[in-house]
Length: 72
Image (cartoon, rainbow, N blue to C red; front, side, top):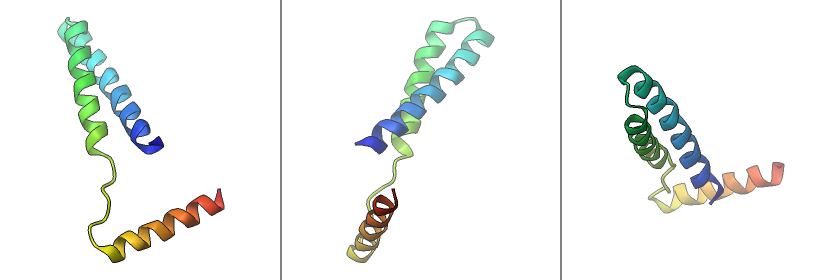
């Protein structure tokens, strides 16, 4: 769950920044802020890693994650 909220948070932050800039330039900050947040959520949702399809790749991914957790 940690990764999902991280990407969603980064997407929302990016959307707020872009929406604020567009809102200041266009003169409608509230509207563009809402549009920016929606775009940011979409960016955050699309940037998540997908689970591997084949069993061999899935096993390699699990081994890699275990190594990363053991190092931390």
